Image (cartoon, rainbow, N blue to C red):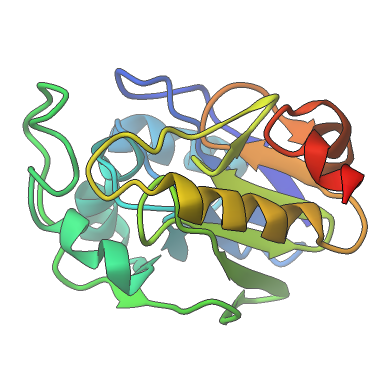
Length: 211
């Protein structure tokens, strides 16, 4: 398995990641913006997009989804609690941030906590981690953990926007804290980190070790 990180996209500098296996299976984690750039990078890597897994439905994570589906016929997956965000500008917070021009996506597939999504030799386990949104999720594969806007390096995602819930976020962070082992954390914003580092140094997680 290989993980490629694309440059931050959208007005929010949002990360997206490509995960691929030795046979060329290709899964994109979040699609912030600029489908042409994403397709150009995939072409450089010799990859064809098979699936998009969305950590949640805010505009800065889904901006390129409709165009990528149109050009590649890839499948799109999202938690059902965030499904409506793929269809409405208000729900995806595009208008909230003054962004426009996003196309709705009507044919997305859904998953639940504990679902396993496969593509070739790739096998992603879904962790439902509400808080930033009610449908926020993380994806776990081998020693990689894609956390979207749930967990950042030394920080966490906002919970003060529509559909946010700080109490739910605290429960989700506990869920991540108590995962067995450590993982490389690939967040929706800012730099990569490790779960072990965040257990020790992230102020929203480090206190959990006291119990």
